[in-house]
Length: 121
Image 1 (cartoon, rainbow, N blue to C red):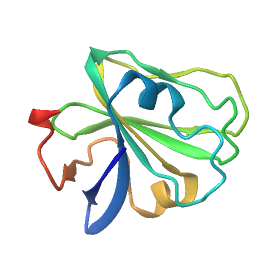
Image 2 (spheres, rainbow, N blue to C red):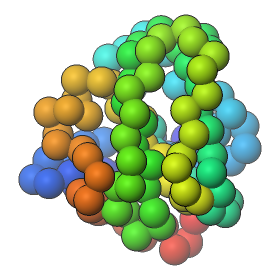
Image 3 (tube, rainbow, N blue to C red):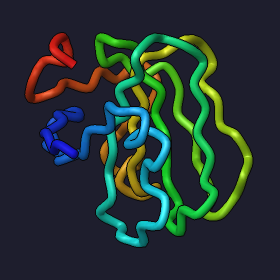
């Protein structure tokens, strides 16, 4: 998996990039680190869903348009099978530890900037 830097407001945060079907399916399952951060790049814009089965850390998910605009955020509790679904078709989802997401100011209307272009992904 590749790591890149994501600019959120004035913060730079390293995130793992999940682009393959296996990486997207596995996500952050089984990780207990509070530093786990992942940007999911889906092959096409759809109303994708996330769940927390086998994920021991409380996470926030931000649903993003391809241009990095946050359209929605949700809090996700550990070890649950509740499906959290994007409210509209999206190409990106960002999972961060719950506290980091809040302190970084991630909310609808905020634009996240990647250190490198997703055009080649």
